[in-house]
Image (cartoon, rainbow, N blue to C red; front, side, top):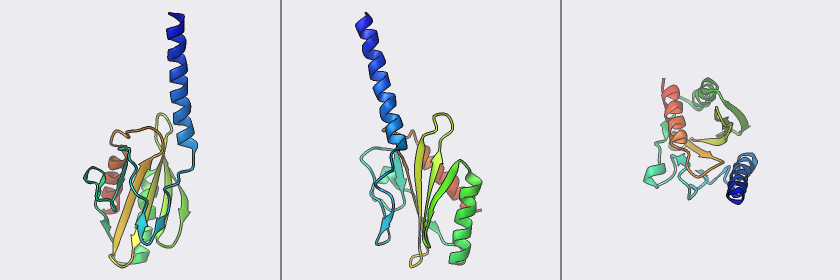
Length: 149
């Protein structure tokens, strides 16, 4: 009985250590190339407006009247949402890390402004775990609702 209890403790400890390591690791999927954000992971813990995978797809958002108004609205939306810290801002690309409430998991959100198509692309991915229980899609829906006001 003691051996089973010890095995359970070891398994739970390893699981928690793995989650902590994933949460603190710098993601390799970040950034954009040729107008495209990173590909979707095999895990169901991400959404993007630039994927053809139906269950992970979200719609891109429309530009405002100008680039300046669009970038200003994106930044204001992130600020309104809270629980995030802007990590990088280039002329047409923003990267922010969201921290979840209870367990303080880190989720990476990238936004790419496409000047040619006048679209705002959105990508959100959880760092830790396998499933995100719909958190990234809910985050997109919240972002969309605030941005479109």
